View 1 (cartoon, rainbow, N blue to C red):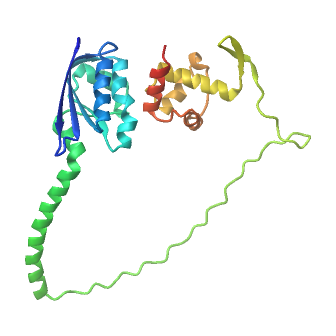
View 2: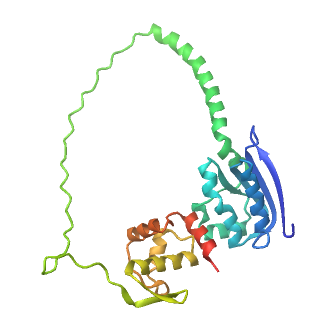
View 3: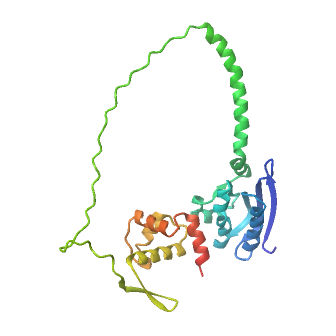
Length: 270
């Protein structure tokens, strides 16, 4: 395929680890082929992927999406997608986009393989260590029987003092003069958006969702804290809300995780 060359090998006793070595560049022209190769491997029941990027000198934003779009399915089946051997230029973009919080990466193939198959290797190592300790324990036991054992008196601990916690304070709901609770938030008439030719009024909650979505579409890799700061900019509505409030809205929108926000941005960008 033009612009890209892909080689596939396997590791593990059952060839359960798929190693995809890529050469060339990954952008909108080469992404479909690479995505199709990964999809075929998943269809065959493979969920452990190592992508060797040693021969790649450029990855576009769409190209990064190939490695993120399948993460949820891979991890649900006990697998993952690991990137290795990134060039300095590619790694700089990887750090700039804060992808390290979403995708694992290593500088060597062996480290990535151990990440997947390390459980088996650690088990074998423990068995060897146990065998050595058992032989050593037998000699220690023979010498221990000759020496008299000293009894150690148990140390009595002083009873712990119980500290009573103050009762939580209840937030009082403001009541107007008529004794009724305040009416729900009214529609904000000065903030309107035209959707499909119809002018729709947004409540304050809907406006907040709209501004959050706009930030995610522009910068899908921001954390909840950085989204909170971005919302204070005039471009995103000069919204001043707490980080906790923004996290609650992200959960409501189903965009709590960065990978979900990135997939959302890929699907909705024009």
